[in-house]
Image 1 (cartoon, rainbow, N blue to C red):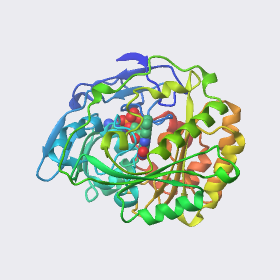
Image 2 (image 1 turned 90 degrees about the vertical axis):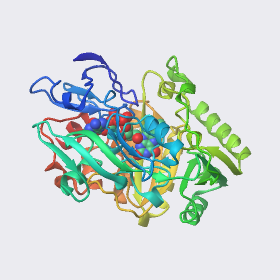
Image 3 (image 1 turned 180 degrees about the vertical axis):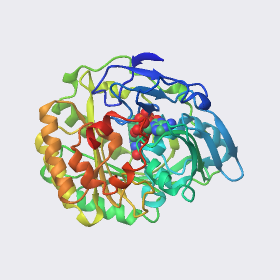
Amino acid sequence: MSVGAIDTWGRLDRRDRLAVTPRFRRDMLQSLPPRRPLIAHGLGRSYGDVATLEDGVHLRTEDLDRIMSFDPQTGVLRAEAGISLSAVLQLVVPHGWFLPTTPGSRFVTLGGAVANDVHGKNHHQAGTFGSHIRAIGLSRTNGKEYVLSPDHEAGLFAATVGGLGLTGLISWVEIQLVAVDSSFLDVETLAFENLEEFFEIAAASEEGFEHTVSWIDCLGKGERAGRGIFSRANWCTDKKYQAHDDRSVMLMPFEAPSFILNGVSVKAFNIAYRAAQMLKLGRHRTHYAPFFYPLDGIGSWNKLYGPKGFYQYQCVTPKEAGITPVRRMLGEIAAARQGSFLAVLKTFGSKVSPGLLSFPREGVTLALDFPNKGKRTLDLFERLDRIVAEVGGRLYPAKDARMPPALFRAGYPRIDEFLAYRDEGIDSDFARRIFT
Ligand SMILES: Cc1cc2nc3c(=O)[nH]c(=O)nc-3n(C[C@H](O)[C@H](O)[C@H](O)COP(=O)(O)OP(=O)(O)OC[C@H]3O[C@@H](n4cnc5c(N)ncnc54)[C@H](O)[C@@H]3O)c2cc1C
């Protein structure tokens, strides 16, 4: 067992924590001290506290990263839960396969992708990661081992997908990959001037484009409110398969001082970003790495937010609520002058997520980073929470470090069903904050 720094991605709560890093699956439970609660910890890409536990043991999965089987004919892959999506892609892309869906970072483990039932730019067609799982190997702290699938131990499967690591230790995952005709995408970039235009373009793109996402200027007021850039893409068909290379990832060697992230610099960034994107309007061919993982090129960009860290606020509001909640939230953010560099807006499709606590549901999701400015930031979140709650929306636990328990309960009506499947030897700071 070791003691060392285990940071959350938002770096709001930085301290030394107890950790074990087993080398083999069979050692996962053997390596633990008795009667001490534990939490699995993947690559720590969750922004808040789902993968930390104040007085518990962090079971780091980074060495449980073996491929157990891969069939290049069928695209079925089984691997240990600690393998990164990056390593999976390096293996499968040259054979013409890709992940069925991917979050905006490839430095995420298979176990983490399952436990947060992550989503990607193709949610409107593919649904969440959990929809593509064939089987999960799960070890409970009482020593019981399970093989879960949508048809076998279906209740525990539904609790484990999106279950925030609280139903047991995921030891391996088997997924169905998707065949692609290239490792490049044909991307079309369009500008929109307001939210009405965003919703029109999103609706018009859902059928014909596998991947859609947009960036929105969250500081724009008046005529500029809700303007942004929409990207939509399909895979090319040139049969050229080139996996990405992680050797070019740069590391931020130092923390940025807090004063760099003031309203003026964020506004300047948003204007510069929009200007750069406007130059790219139209169609272009791009490799999957910059398209799906634009931030992965700088290894620890989270240090840009300085020593106080940052929050991400990601919500989904139901389709039937339409444009109004998004307009109101953007109004609050612009008025508070606290917007961030990275405001992302995307529609979720109607495919039902398989997890009892999965975040995605049909509607529109807004995700923004906020430098931690203490009470000012938390007060703004309260105003945003009210808008989300009024329309029956929900916040994403993978990004959260502060949502009130009542908002979680209201947004996740299957919570009591989920709690029946919890593993009593596992806990997290998130679970303590929300469930007790
Ligand atoms: C730049 C960036 C972009 C992102 N974009 C998206 C996006 O587009 N869509 C999206 O959905 N998410 C996105 N995320 C969030 C990220 O995909 C999730 O937080 C993901 O779960 C992180 O995986 P991880 O391996 O780092 O797990 P951690 O953050 O370490 O842990 C996440 C959860 O998984 C549990 N867990 C991990 N391994 C196991 C295991 N073996 N057994 C049981 N439980 C386990 C942990 O206990 C914890 O509850 C993004 C994050 C970043 C930093």
